[in-house]
Length: 331
Ligand code: ACO
Image 1 (cartoon, rainbow, N blue to C red):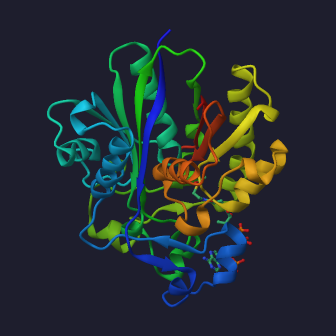
Image 2: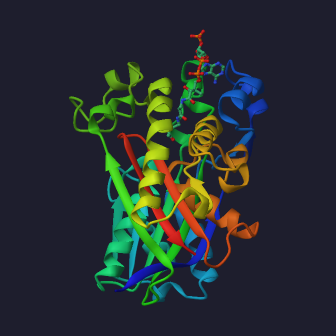
């Protein structure tokens, strides 16, 4: 049976670094509070002229080069983001245009922090059925432009960063490596636990002065509810990935979780009883980059030599929706 494997990985973050100390100057927060609650020390934010597809393009270029391919070798694009350049069209076609690839399909996935896992799973299915052979899967995010940078918005503003990561998936007939399984879940009862209602069709107008005056353009989060669900769903969906493939926790080479918050990652690690070196974290440098966090982390883990041929790598995410998911990979 045809399967897919990752043959190229790349990431890109904008140059500008914003530290916790920088945030202290614009809102009532502290380096200590942010580090203690999230593990974040700094994050990268774009300048005003840079958009999500710009970041996605840079990461994609690197992933395609890393696979020793050229853009024209790509058959299809799956783009995950919650912060598209425009209300429509989605950012996938913009990445396609920037890469100079003509007429291939570009699909946009909107599953927030779980976006990259959903995108990877969709791409994997297309390859398994033989419809496409090489798919570019991108996770890119510009969060900084939507943050409420006053004290009122500090619970969310301190957590998020901008960045992009991408992988090239390719079909293979090798049975003992590649993506072994993916698992996708959602529970829309919790949609309003972490959401941004504007711009959407549920409000009387897409944009109005009232919506601006009522400050409804900013994302809202019930932090404790998110935390409570995340620490249950992450271990569940990681265990599902292992069980499906007759693997145990001892078989795990590396877990690459969505970088939501180090306290969540640490709670998940403890529940799974995995040693620290088996659960990757780079949130201190980037904050939460939503759909981009897993491919950025994967690229850095590879650069650091933490993933070897034959290793079992488990990707897992939880986020707004609520959505959650995992992917089991034999590298
Ligand atoms: N700086 C200083 N104080 C702050 C800040 C801040 N940036 N943000 C909130 N506070 C204050 C609040 O106003 C509140 O003050 P009050 O008690 O006077 O009302 C107090 O801190 C709340 O403190 P705690 O109750 O101790 O906060 P908690 O321990 O719940 O931590 C946090 C908050 C970090 C948001 C936590 O709930 C959490 O980690 N939730 C998960 C959220 C998350 O990771 N979201 C990421 C997106 S979803 C995803 O990717 C999975």
